[in-house]
Image (cartoon, rainbow, N blue to C red):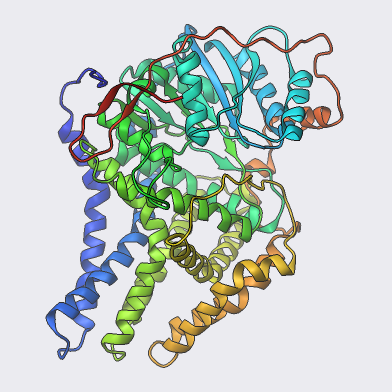
Length: 607
């Protein structure tokens, strides 16, 4: 069975040039770090020890540079005043009005009022967007009777007359988690739709943004998936507002840089994206990985793997550039509201990304896909890399001067916010952040907070990694999405192990590198107080975002609808729940991820 898209005219030179713009500077930065580390080593050390130490330094710097340079590339694109969509190479046109589109909310034990309010307002907004025929599905994997009863009640209250229909499906077999939930939709109804817009329980997207995605899909028939940028909004704790501010400040540059260098070989984040149903069915049937946890079993971080499989079958995967006016699209999500919940989410992502070790050897993967897989791993493996660097430093020779390397690391950590600040000020966007003075103060405070918590986050990742090597399969836990204050007990239990490790590391490095030791010590001391304080909802005059300063009408309407649903009111008194459409599915063959296996196993289906 050939699951590949028809081959286009070769564009290898253009793709190579884009990749070179990203990978070339990264190679230069890593090489410079390697040479700098090698030059600072004493002559008495053996050559293998010198090279191993310099490689550790280069790897640490490279991981930090991955994000920093992408934002640097984005700044170049943004300040060039060229339309980012033209630079990216993605063709754009208005939707034809003939598409069949399914909008999916894949949920598991979520806040049903929030989900159905978002589904309802999206259905209302899409009705006038001119995309064609559309339906909104809430695909539930909930198991508890209480959650199911609430979902059914919210469906009745949120139901609407006319199109798009608001549809609800709950499956009894939860195999495959979210990926299996979406795959079951494809094998049941995928042939009835050209495209599906995949959303998370906390996602929200305007009809205009969905129309841009549909138009882009129609203009690029080889596109299998287009990922929209999404910004966290709507939460009020200091921690959440810090995350929202950082994302809004840095995100546009990341979007521009990513859209440019990836071109048609992009990545998938699991939500806020449009997917061509036929391409997904033909190329994205996920197998179970061999072996035991944490490397084997059902693929948890399925999104990056699905993008890699699409690219392997010669479908294109794009990042949607910013709108014609250079402003971000109206595509949103929510963020964990405190440090402890943030680390819990990281723990889930760590387990999923560890499985990608077994995917890297799959036959036929594109270079860009390998980079996306490795970058996800690097985000969590940075902590052990840093620990190995400091251990090698302590064992090799403590007379090595680290000042130049410390400065380089500090610059790379601060660079994304600094570049975002330059772009916001140069682009005249400061008013949305409360004015230039508040924008600068917010960026400085955000950088200080990130610097203080970075050690405890890195060490928490290291502890989780070690624990995961000896743990069984992860339970499919319900995510906490609400604003909530941390208790002292919860903060101590979650953060004290990392604080102790940091304190011991600071003592060990005190004589050799006082600056690094002081940073680790302050991070250890500040972790729990900062976690407690930033879990509170305080109206600081900082960290405002354009979305907070001028809320979008769709977000305000979602809040209004959600309040009505919680109060037990039907939005349309005469509306009845729409029945599910008759099955019209697509075959979804399971793909091979082995080194020398066939790309698909014909006759095997997922769902």
